[in-house]
Image (cartoon, rainbow over all chains, first blue to last red; front, side):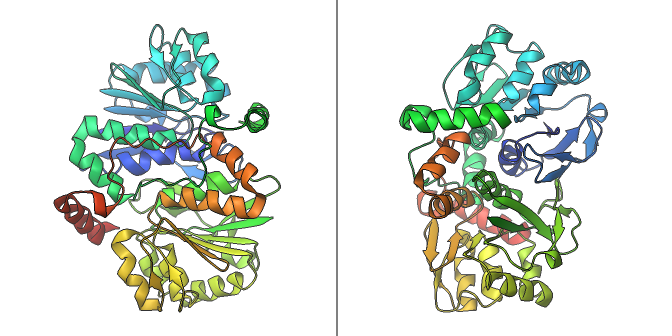
Length: 210
Length: 210
């Protein structure tokens, strides 16, 4: 089985690495990171470089396509060549997945019209631009589309997807392998459960940089 | 504040990227990935390259040192030059952190003798080799040492550490920013809660590759 994850300048590293760390552990999977030029990309804050192993042009079909998010998606939604590639590859997939604002790229490619989808909580209204119905859920599956909420939600999405692709036992074994037994020290992962001033600070920061 | 994360061939990507995605969002932090030669490293399965921005030799002090894990730590625990660097930099830190088998590197550097620490569940007994007392906990703080369990536990550790470094409100804002509201589809993150045959499969796979 071939799984392909798109990388681009301004990607949020965890959006890509969360699903990769899960999906690449499925037996008999070939996991490939691609970027438009096949060159290393810089993450959203410029701190880390990620090195793909192929150009988008080298991948014309895949079983699973994963589109992560990050500030760089603001350019991708206007990148006709990239959107053509997403559409063409999506036509060949069993599953097309997104994390965070990766769903806006799927939307810009016309893949979410009339369907439910999710994204980072701060960007949910932006999904409507593409005719999608935003759902404030961690993971949304509709047909062969599976969209995840912000950043870390890609791990949960990838475990759900692993169960669909390879069964519950494989998904559980991978969850155990990455010891995904989350114990966040705060109950602060959703804007519904954080004081409004904290939400405002995060929203302003994301508007500036993310 | 300077935060430095070690990269090496055979690192597990999520071990490094989880803490990076949290800690690099602390205001006024300079986050630097280093590798021995300053060259890109390959992750444990060879699929992804990670590009650091400095050589270890360029960093002689840091406020926070993060040592991730992965199969590559099996070489690091015998790498005298690297262990010298870890010891020297640790002498300058406010906090020294590890994820997964990164704690075995801290142990090999002699930093865990007589103290409690944790690591990936499958490697807990290995901590005793270095005189540490293994604890089966998600995050273990002892003095300025903070060690995390396997792979994904680095996210929880980094949020705990963020609260220590910058306060609870900053940690909560970052948790909200990465929408860390985990909803794994299975309760399979700990060997205590997974059927024994699944644990055995994972243990065998890790023994071979991770």
